[in-house]
Amino acid sequence: MVLPALLLEIGSHQAEVAETLISVGEFLVIFVAARLLAELMVRVQLPTILGELVAGVLIGVSGLHLIVPPETQVQLSSWGLGLLSSLADLSPEKVQEIYAETFPNLQAVSQIGLFALLFLTGLESELDELVAVGAQATTVAVTGVVLPFALGTAGLYYIFHVPLIPAIFAGAAMTATSIGITASVFGELKFLRTREGQTVIGAAVLDDILGIVILAVVVSLAGGEGFSVGPILKLVAAAGVFVAAALFLSRTAAPGFDWLLDQLKAPGEVVVAAFVVLSLCCFVAQAIGLEAALGAFAAGLILSSSKHTHAIQDTVKPLVALFATIFFVLIGTGMDLSVLNPFNPENREGLIVAAFLLTVAIAGKVATGWSYFSKEKTNRLVVGLGMMPRGEVGLIFLGLGTQAGLLTKPLEAAILLMVIGTTFLAPILLRLVLGGSAGGPDLDPLAEIPT
Image (cartoon, rainbow, N blue to C red; front, side, top):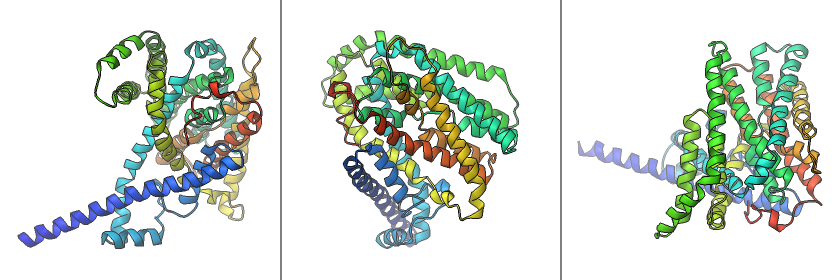
């Protein structure tokens, strides 16, 4: 009995060694690749987030296979597996299995980065300015949802003869705006607290809410449950109450938070208290059917009038620098660029549909810049371009469609190319448009974040 127990203990130790090597190795690969590409982007005057996305592509399923999301069904590189298996004294198959089991841990860490970034975005938002552009942001959001959704769905159904439910799903995938990518680019370009920046951020938040409602409808239809008004109205009501509560608390909750913080004496009280509020808001948002990311933005908005705002910023920025990098790199790792190969006959149908979707996706969001009335002079092209990137939100739609078995391979490839195209083009075009007109240092809440 002693020998089997000893062998079991040795095997468990080897698995722990492999798990540790994998976790530490992932961080090492991500940070080295991201910093190298970020440095390159800075030297060619492009946003560093683009470097992080490219770094993800290079080390992911389209490149070296050093970090690959398990859902892509792509194997890790043979030499990487060989190295890990020899160091942990396990078979390559066992290492691959441990990698797949532990990958959600890396995704969880990346979510901290997204939440911290959106928390900081809300923290740096001028509430009066955000409210002042509320009408414009609402118009931009509604236009940015309706236009791509209607054009995309109709085009796929009538021109490409895609069945109605998959066509609706693809149209829904074009409604989203990645607030994380937009906030990062605007912050780096010193444009976040301008009128245009606040309009886009407000519209992106509303976009997410509207996108969630559309997603709920589409998933319900795809599941054969039929269209039911009740759950949709409950979701809309929950979103309205949540946003109203966040705006109310942003006016009233700061003094209570400040008093509590003044009573705390243990080191780290600022960042811990801030993350308690952040976690609570994310929990509430998710619990009522909204995205936790919206809760993160709301938490920042609630604390934006605190007297400790600058101290909170200083403690959160390093976390954003570390963990938001992981988030953006992971987006790149899942992008399969092999679907771009026109010489593969299986790709051609997807490329044609992708060209249509990408055109509609760009035009539908850029048009939002001209969808609102404003007495103030605004750069409407910046507003439209800021709404363009689909990023992780588009990938979520794609993943749900694939899991539900709704999408053909060509349509999957087309949606993926639309997401890739808008995600990569938005930072480049914003840099070109804002290169000579970005705001000064006092307008740059994220400028010190070395992402």
